[in-house]
Length: 268
Ligand code: GUN
Image (cartoon, rainbow, N blue to C red):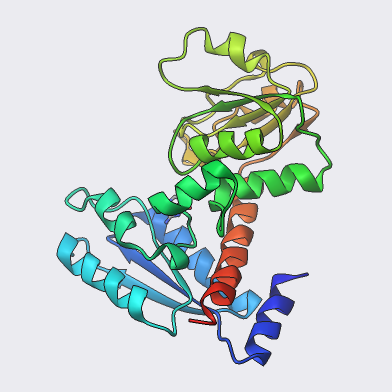
């Protein structure tokens, strides 16, 4: 069912899905992402609230807002946009979010639930990648899946979700030796390292499915992924472009999670 319909069904039952988005400081990329999330809410029929706080906000002030949102019954779920200014400890903030309102699935309880396959929310980008693979009927079971990047936001949960679908998963990172030997084994290659056009066609097996999670600006200011699209597309059977690839899926999953949060919290 479309998210718009789900939102309408909830509203008919007297449940008003509401997503709050907290952003601290002036990170230009974060501002663009947050504006997109607010727009998506409007499109789907989810009420949104944006809290744009100055870069000078203290950790205690941000913790106070998190506590307020945790306790506000009119907010079904919320996110704190990352990265945070360096004087705020990200982990302290994420740990303070009520796991039932944690639509990013960054809280340790939700991370642990994902590990054992018993979850309420999945993290938006890795779940978006999985939906993309499903949509294109790409079989994961028994396939060599290589994830490049080991971040808590993408690489680690991505590996777990591929494993849940019976992929044979390898995670590569900055200390991996002979990286291209490993990437060339991949039937499904997911790249999330934040380095513009790092993975080139010669690192890809003929016919591989290539998912590019990167979003970088090159020297000319152009948006590019972590994969060098022009050389990679000669090898890949499927490849996601940047922009216009994984990003839209990430946003769709956030809306899905916001509706799920409204459903979860309706009986409180
Ligand atoms: N920064 C980059 N990606 C994300 C995301 O998915 N959620 C949040 N909160 N911050 C991010």
